[in-house]
Image (cartoon, rainbow, N blue to C red; front, side, top):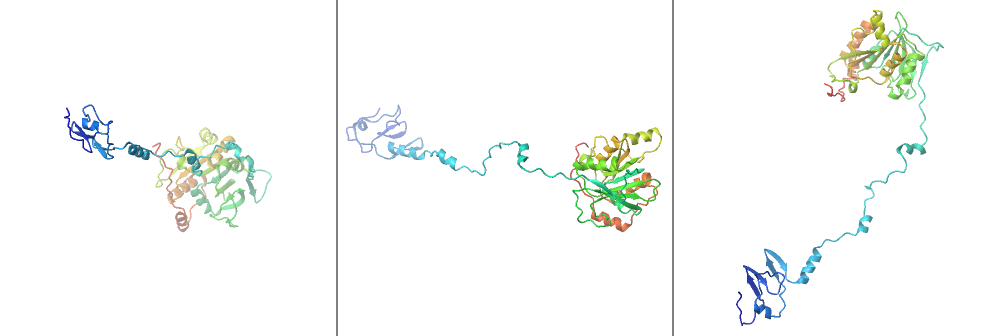
Length: 353
């Protein structure tokens, strides 16, 4: 109970209850156990504009000050029209095109098609050449060996319109980017050599293979010397080790098994199952298979190095070119190895190992 007093009320009346102090003029903070005093009820003086504490929090005693503080603390809502005007047009996703992707080139003139490659011989003949053996050198070790072979005669060239002649010399040199056709002197039967020193794209492989095998040149046997492509090989290839494999057509494999005659590369392991060969070498072997020609593809690894050069030389002298000297001087071989070092290919994968 709160005692009544006859004394005049103080200028700042208070009410006490439960250990908390409240100004008597604020009724919304009074609880059931806090009642204003009778003296405070009889006074009509306005509540003083000062701050009060409630549970360690500070409240303004003037309602107008509370409304002003609340209005000031409210965040300002951005104008949607202003936001649309300030969009970054550079980073905005462009609208979808009204044309399909295949229709965008309709307004551009079509590109001119490349002219077809052709064979050019020094002594043109109406009848095709029919050699007993056609050797097509594509890999760097085989190109190096035949570049140093002296017993050969230039009889023609394969002209690729996309390969420029700038930088080539009049006389054939190892640095020329060309495709020359030679006749090997001293062979018992007619033997032709195609030295392919220029790259042939995958789109042009079939047309080049048809020119070399089946049209103007119809050989009895074909030997293609290529390289193992590490990205298509099932397993890991170490640049410190040398490998050589072969692939044969059905005519070459059946000829050796039925008649008892040895195949062109006797004793060489076959290409591992699951591996693949693509490009011009595969197109040449496919042409031999379709025309029922005895064809053999020999692939070696790596592309450069004295060990792989010695291995390819041994295979050729033992099985193909018995009476030819494919050796070269030590100085020339060292120069070749210094210009073309062994490369570490990043496509080696351990997926199948």
